Length: 252
Image (cartoon, one colour):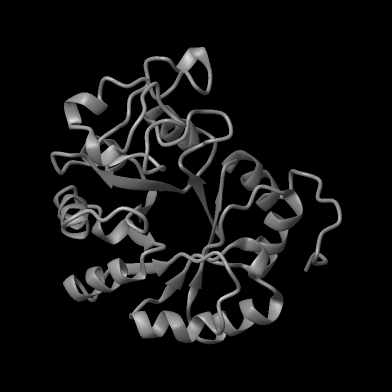
């Protein structure tokens, strides 16, 4: 059965990459979470999407220029709604302390394709292992060099290159990286591509799938997972509880 991952949590109804968004995603039926990790000035992994704090907090500037104490002072919820004004940027360790008590799977995106973070891979990998989440965690990144570093550290972990264009023969590219998964943009996954990925035993988790017709398409193809802002909608479509208009595929 195709799994449902909450993209930055339940980011349609809560401020992204906050504990409120993660808890809500679990309540809405997500089976996994996709999160983004940067490093603070003092080398602490924190969960936030952008290289800067401006869009999703009360502050300005690059994450890498804030100490953990400084970044914890920022309001990470009010930009979304006043009801979330007490939300803060979580550390990866705080997040792992919570998720390990749930049945959720985890996709950690290393956000080092624009800013270089020394030892990001090792710090994230060590924390994941310390909290017993190794078997439930997928590592993804647009920085494929970073994925190769992770693969050299541990041949048993699941790494998945993220990409935004129509990658030529992504099954072959994944194998070059030592990956057995890919995280492609959903509109790039035409049936022949999906069929080849399946033929080559490469797991597929498209992002970010929020429309009923696309969700239905991927559920019918039985991809490994979908990454979505709306886990409740995805669950309804998967369960046949949501009407699907203009679907690409007929029901089996």
